[in-house]
Image (cartoon, rainbow, N blue to C red):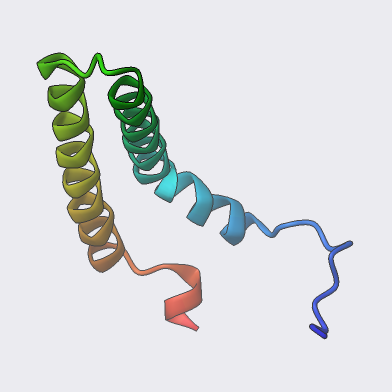
Length: 83
């Protein structure tokens, strides 16, 4: 069992970390939605090139945001890493 206290509110550093990761999270959610839409289209037998392109664009956005997120992490020292 974890000893983490779930009644504690997130710190300002926690909220800043979540906010910094938000573009990546949004891109990953768009990718997931595109995958689900494509699977549903395939299941109905109506997958189109547009569905495939949407998935490809979403994958590229995740890759782009991943690199941007890593660059942000390595550029500016976070309060956690400075300690």
